[in-house]
Image: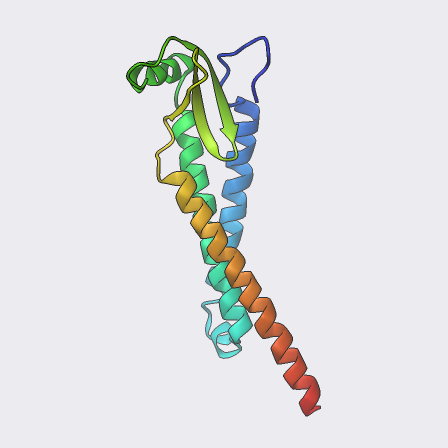
Length: 160
């Protein structure tokens, strides 16, 4: 979040730190739940909707881990180091830089040039596309899980 009076502001540290803490706790919670699904009792009661739900949670946990990995790239860089990265990766023919901003969605550190051309630095290029694919897979898993659950309920009612 950039303040109009400071065009050189990257990611807000308070928000970044909060995202890291909440993301880590959420990821640990998902992994703990998934580990509980590996017990013998859970495996014996496994249903198709539960398998798809768990696959969706795996994709979600991986997406969270990648997002946190990207956040860590920003967290450990001082303002001066971020500015150096902007200069180091400035495309050929790009005029002087006029600002820097940090976006959380998609996760990126954007260097703003005088000609209106922006470019991203620090965050690895694979982070955002990988997160998008993982979240689409998670959404697909949820969708299949819900459909299978509804089919299972309908089949159970017809028998009863």
